[in-house]
Image (cartoon, rainbow, N blue to C red):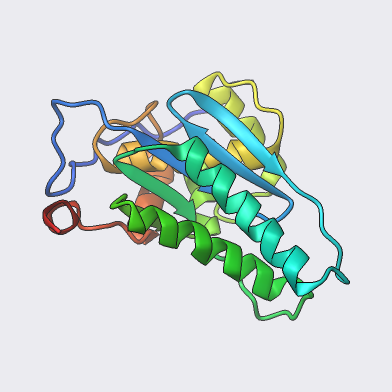
Length: 199
């Protein structure tokens, strides 16, 4: 069975980007149970376990542990592409903890002068599959097929797609993607590299 995809369209690099250098980009799928990380060195996952009845100190320590590991794994990069927070319209026991972890990591990245891009989950799915409502299994399959990666989890697949989107934004896509996939970049919150580089 063959499929026909529309041709890829080059995306102009943003102001402040220099096509002559190879950018270091990290992709982060932030989660309390398994944060996915993708860098030029590959992908990894930071798994942790917690319980609804954990003490405030235990919850704080868990969040700190995840953030410590993530920032160490990311190292010094030119851009961190982070999946945006999921909708918190439905109440849940870990809502505050998820939000706290997300901000803890983003705060540390910005504190190290690393520009951060925020990628909505639907944009991540659309870039990977062409469908913004695609499930994680479809994103995993698409990531393995397009980038030739062997991925142990959908967390790592999501992180790889986020990294690929960051590279594409900088004018250095990891692989050609159909136009219908590439338009997902438009719905993301990208940093102003010219402004942030000067700050």
